[in-house]
Image (cartoon, rainbow, N blue to C red; front, top):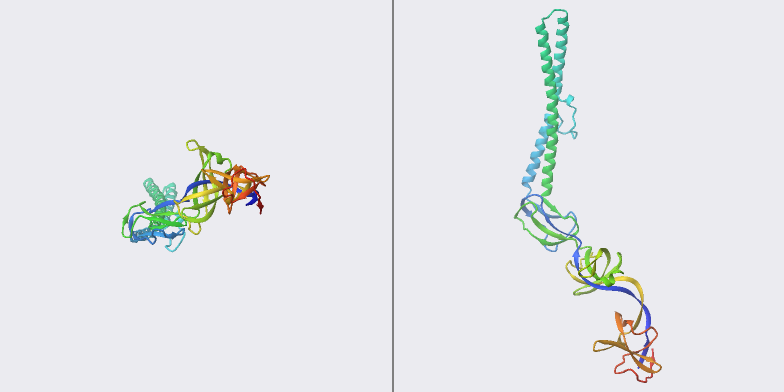
Length: 361
């Protein structure tokens, strides 16, 4: 018979909970404009990057609208006398041909009126000729003001043509659907050649790195949970242990389930984890917690009761224990045996009260 001393060691204190992995972001993407799909270069499971093209419409109509808007803009520039090759659209109304012509007529009418007034003062012309010259001047002044208003109107039309061109270019750009973030295609909703309306779903994209793990922690364990704590998780069918960290905590306990909801961020650069997978997680609430260990082979399980056989003064004593976590070939004893007690390894049929000769190791 061999005995060993129950030994003191450390293990991380953990809270074991289960939850479901979810994508950090998921979006159903559609086009802002209607049209016929020319291509969808991605399919189910395709890895996509931010800015990558996901779908394109037949762009003939949009290109023609851009050409039409460019021609209308050039026409508006020409009406203001702006060089078509110039990049500057601001113009002084006084420098435009229309206003210069009206200004010349006004200056001529003003000079003629002044001459007639001088002659009338010398009683060399009649009152009727003076009134006629004044009327011609007033007409020229009105036409000058009209020319200024017309130039301002043409400037407003030019600004409108600029907006129409930008709108046409935006519609051309909107005929291409691009990915808003790095991720993977979860579902494709349309096929090339199909006519789609504005906003109709084309593809669903999910962000697969990092993933979000939602966990409901029992109220009794909630006090030790903090943002930034490590989370170890495993998923069904995969023995690998993945690491994450607590990123968000609910501010309140759920009154119905008596649990605290938390979210952990789990890195997934290689795509080994999938959104929607069921996960078992261990939230590490303390890095090194003192615990008592005994060999796993020292535990006797009978009718659901766990116990160990210890040796005291040369006799065996049965002690009921409560076990905790397993670590390699050792078991944590949370209640029933103290560090330093002599525990029988592989007790077999030993019972309490027997006199024994123990071999220590």
